Length: 70
Image (cartoon, rainbow, N blue to C red; front, top):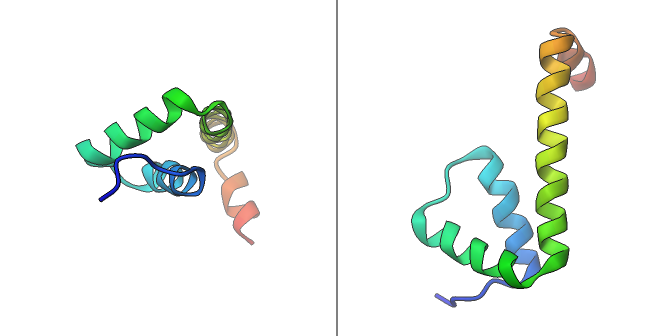
């Protein structure tokens, strides 16, 4: 297993982290990559903003999420 992630792997891991808990090694590798890569840090921040917006939307308008799925 390589220690450093490339950007594609970091993006994939960030996406997976939204669906499941990353293990310690995955979190450490991702944190290391984010500490040296501004682009992936920006991507991570954007993903968090989108996630918060979707949560707020679902709380404000409970039927809105079902409408988006159609």
